[in-house]
Image (tube, rainbow, N blue to C red; front, side):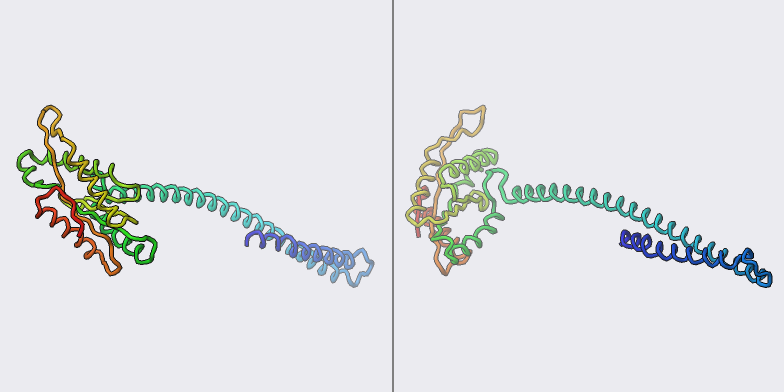
Amino acid sequence: SINASQSYILTSDQDFTAAMESGLVEIGTMVTPASGCNDLETLCLQISDRVGKLHACVQRKKQADIARVLNLDKERQNAQKRLVKSKRDYDEFLRQSHEMLKEIETLKAVSLHDPLTEVYNRRAYDNQLPKTLAAFKNKVLKTCSMIVFDIDNFREFNNTYGHLAGDRVLAYVAKLTRESLRGDDLIFRYGGDEFVILMPNAFMDAAAGVAEKVRRNITSVEFKLFKNSDVTVRVTVSMGVAEINLDDDTSSFFSRADRAMFVSNSRGRNRVTPP
């Protein structure tokens, strides 16, 4: 807009000023006393005076237009400076926004992981299970199985050896479990000593096989509870397995696997039970 105004002043008003100046100069020449008309001398002086004033008026207008052009150019320069500053501010805003997004992603990742066992936590489970159900019902997944397990007699273990030893066992059980799973499987610490494994596209037999592998790997390890102590223990786990149904919701799917784990507990623990 500033550039357009500047161009208009320099083209249109310049032509007008030039035409006025030329015409007034011609009139001034025609009415001077040098024409020899004595009776018109007074009139000529008056007209010449008028012409001079008109010429001065045109000059003032010309100067005003020049000043306007200069002022517009100054405004344009100021606008450019503001644009440059705005660009810097915008770039800084983008930089800070990217940093904030990275921090948010980091915080989100932290909020979905259990710090002790380094597996997903209950919040992550609550977020993931509805997505898994939707993927199955939309035929993105062929099937999905769930394993629920807990550490046998873990409360007594804590009472005997202390919570620090219990934390070591929880962390090591989670580590052994992760090492036994497939690439797409997800493990969650559901709460306390209870864990949940989601196995996309795993039918019941395959899931039960993985559960048995996890159970054997855990029971075969002799845990050293403390660095400066020779005290070692073995722990066992009781596991329940369920495969998803079309009419399942988040509660029913989990409940069938949880009931299967309860059966394992009631039958003497240290076993895998499908429903």
